[in-house]
Image 1 (cartoon, rainbow, N blue to C red):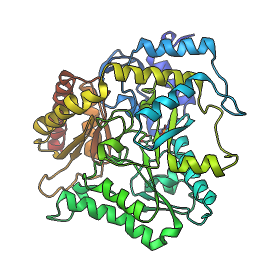
Image 2 (image 1 turned 90 degrees about the vertical axis):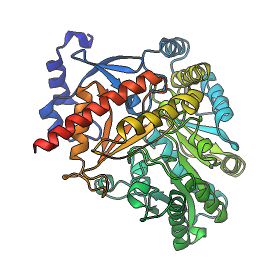
Image 3 (image 1 turned 120 degrees about the vertical axis):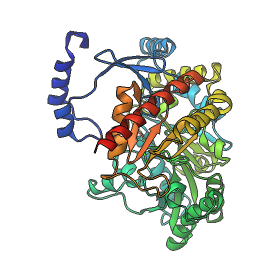
Length: 459
Ligand SMILES: Cc1ncc(COP(=O)(O)O)c(C=O)c1O
C-alpha cells in the first residue's frame, strides 16, 4: 500500500505513534505534527499539502545534483537486478566499489588514494578514529593516541562521532565519551576575533590553539587533529584563509596526522571537489559521505592518505574493522553515476566560477544590509546569515536562537527551506542552483526577515 492511501493527518498520527526522529524534542514534535515531504524535483521539495518549497539545504547538505534524477534511479535499478548485494569481506569484491575507489583516488588531493567504505559520515569517522590510532600503534607508538578536535565541531552522532564533535549538549547525554579527545577553539572570527584583529591574524591565533594543545599533551602523545574545513552544523563557520595552512604546518612540525571531515564540504560544495583543495592542504584522511551519492543512497567513503595506507598494508596484518555494507554495490553504482553527472554538467566549476561568486554577492547586497543581520558569509554554495538585535554591538535576541527560528518559520511559509542553528541561518543548496534560483532564494529570505522584524516590533 502506498502513502497516497493515507491523508496527511493519518500520516502525522502514525508518525507520532511510532517514529522517533533524529535530533528532535519528541513531545514538541508530536504536539505540532511533522511536515511530511512527499516528492521533489530539481531544486524543489513538495509537502503533503502540495506546497512547493525551494530547498536551500539540499536535503541535509547532500542532494548536490538536485532531485528527480532518473539516471541515478536507473543505475540503482540496474545494479539491484544484476547484483543487489555482496560483501567485501573474505577476500571478495564487487565491481562498483572497485571502480569508485579509482575514481575517488583520481579526484582526491595528492597523496590520498585509498578508500574505506561505510554507510554514513558517523561510521566513516569511527573508521578514521580507529585507523589513526591503529596507525600509531603499528608504528610502535601506541601512546601517541590523543585526538585534538574543535568546540562546536560536528563529526556525527555515534559514540565516536559525538566524542570527536564539540557539541556540549550532545556530550551531556553521552554518559561517557571515547577517552583522550580534547577540544580547542574554533576559527569563528565573527564572535571570537579581538577588537582590531585582522582576519589573517585571527586565523593564525586559532591555529595556535592547536599547537598549544599539542604542547600541553606532548607531541609524542598526540595522534591527530580533526576538523571540518568549514564547520557546517556548528553554523557554517568559514575560517580565514590563513588558518588551514598554518594548522597543516603545525601538524607536520609535531608529526601529528591531519584529518579532514569533508562530509559536508566534499563533492563540490566549496567550488573544488574537496575543500582541502580550496584551502590548499594535503590531509592524511578525508571523511566523506552525503553528496558522494547526492543522498540517493546511504554511502560514506573514508579517503586514506599514502602514509597511513602504506603502514596498514605493510605492517598491519588484519584490521579488525568493517561493516556489512562496506562497499555496497548499489550505493557505489549510484555514486559513480552521481560523479559522472557532476563532471558532465561541470557543476563544480560552475560553483567556483559562476554561482558561488554570484551567491556571495547576492547575499551581501540583498540580505547583508538588513536590520536583523549582523553578518553574511559564504564559500562556494554554503552560506550563513547571523541574526542580531544590534548590528553594531552584535547583541543577540533572547532567548538564544528564538529570532532565528522565527526567520526559519517565515522562510518556510514563503517557500524557502533553510535551517536555524543557534542564531545563525544556514544555506547549503543543491549545486544545480542557477543565478535565477539564487535571486528567488534571496527574495524569499528578505521577505522572511521583514516579517520577523515586524513580529519582533509587535512584542
Ligand atoms: C561534518 C560532518 N561529519 C559527520 C557527519 C555525520 O554524518 P551522518 O549523519 O551521515 O552519520 C555530518 C552530518 O551532518 C557532518 O556534517
